[in-house]
Length: 619
Image (cartoon, rainbow, N blue to C red):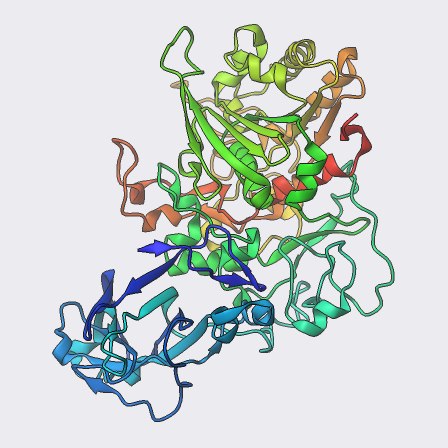
């Protein structure tokens, strides 16, 4: 059964970590992992089996791999053995290889000296075995479907040994380890990964020579504050008033050296997720999606004039205190909400999905409470979700789509009015659903004027209002392997005109059917919302009630992220939505992003806006 067996990262337990733990009561007992479909081997593509195991409770330490390990057929002469075989092959015909150590896990090795007892003596080990070791020679042996672990005979009869396993891989090459040279991306690439980029980074963002000496490949998620030898001072923090928009995307980490996307990005294991959109945790859908995610999370945004502070859960918790932040918007705003929860880590103690509140005069209201190792992100949490932090603060999410526009024109009738009145900071966005109501955006400024007047009159007199801008989507995003070099490059893909920031109303056919601004390149009118969002700043100037309490969070630098989208992730899913079709038939998604991925920069941008401006501090 999966349980928290103490997987380590930097010498500490990984929160919410789950490994397979099995007790073997008798010799010959097996644990079998089966694939959904057979793996067909080709002679030109040698494969390896790779996995982590913990021998802390074993009576003896496993041997190092590469020695004269005896391969036996039909039985195991060591403490434990492993095999790869075709589905249904009898144990008596299976070639077993003794478990051996290829070395410590790279992410855990640095922390072993800080541990006590058996964990310090043994810790998690890694085994890599070429499939040739299993004697796969006959044509039938090239059609594989099972990985088998078996208890051997080399142990006391009364012992009940335990085997703990994690990160089981069948791949064309073994996973790289720290200390190996980073890859070359070509001298012509302006974002080439250089050795001096892979330096230690202190918590403050300044150079950490000590960190670099411990691991020359140490890097931090979403941090471009690399340790250069000439660095002498820490750069000023971005105030997010436009100082962060001029910069570039840098590949600050070697994607080959990232073992687990969730461990690297969030310092914890993401919980098991079900629901209509569970495939947005893309790396869990297939090995291909995992590699695509590893590439996407290796990039960081580096503003030229300031530094983005990394998200620190404890610091944010202390800063927020007992206040409430309200997220109001569509599914992209929900992604920013969940991205912030994942980045805050242990600072979040509970999340709740509340239902029935969106229906007037109902008695069927209730809640689904979850601890930090569970999440309903696969269903976007429903219409109303709440997260509580250790210090008593709350993050509340209101999920609205096209209904939001009429609700903003009559906030007194909106079911979320009580949540609005309680909020100390409101973060909202209109997004891409607006074009369905007003394809030509003729009434957009009117909506901004009415909405701000309504919100300003019903919020707390001290509450702040933040409008987050909208990012465009990217057609053919499944082919993107890196960010685009400029925002202009992204926008050029959506129009045939040289005036990429000029708006033309959607065309109409003789039958009245609507076509996009450019029916071939921008068929979803992705350029529409960002082109008109200056209306919110203009409307705020005309709303005296919001003087000093309104801000625009410009995240247009993410327009360059054509990579990291959900793309074809759902094609690998065998599940269905509630009463719906197979997810594998869902259309390509080039608007939403994977977790972890570029959506985390929405949370990072908000974090820096709130933390780096005194106006948002507690009075």
